[in-house]
Amino acid sequence: MTERTTDPADVSTSASDAREPQQHAATPAAPSVGGAEPPVLHCTWHPDRETVLRCARCDRPMCTDCARRHPVGLRCKECIKETRSPLYKVEPRGYVLSAVAGAAAGVAAATVAQMAFALIGGFFQLFLAFILGSSLGTGIGDVVGRAAGRKRGRGLMVVAGGAVIVGTAIVAVVTWQFAGLSRVPLLGLIVYTVLATSAAAARLR
Ligand SMILES: [Zn+2]
Ligand SMILES: [Zn+2]
Image (tube, rainbow, N blue to C red; front, side):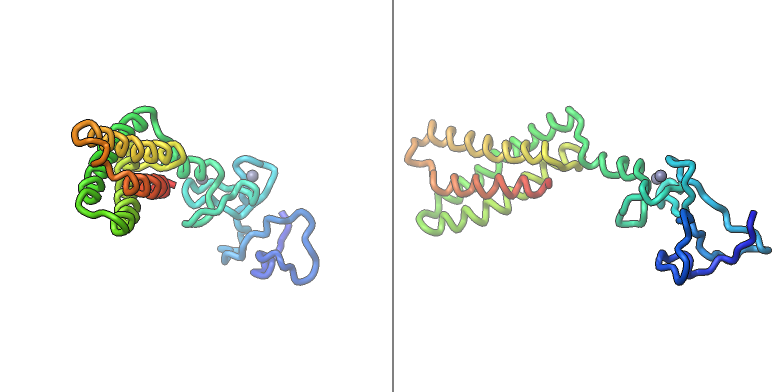
């Protein structure tokens, strides 16, 4: 073991004089107790590499290649996988539940929109369609995400968009069958559907 004084300047890669060959594990100048050398860590995945980094979650040593950025410090590549995937990993059961809940929310939201459009016509109907589309669409996206177990991701975006379209179609068809085609506020519903679909999907991105 070589005696060496660890200088704080060594830690930063901007070496003052000589660049240390292959010595990229310049241990930080922790006040060494009784002259003992600071512990040299080896990467969990690359045992031949020395390092000073530890995962903020599992505390395992890791080299710079294995470290990943995370809002609460550096994490190892395995912890990043574990923390990222649960949010985006949806079980088949989650898809079924979210589709059912989303369709119900889609029908309820389209019913509200339909009733509002029945009262208001012309330009204001379009204005209303914009407001209802974005707000109710966001709500449908919320319902879909919660039903899947507070998940998000591309699959659920499709489910939420489908829920808006199916819900609106059901309401439009029911209105058509029971009240006649002239009672279906087509323009308002179309604008509503476009906006609600994108709002619902955006909620789960
Ligand atoms: Zn870790
Ligand atoms: Zn490594």
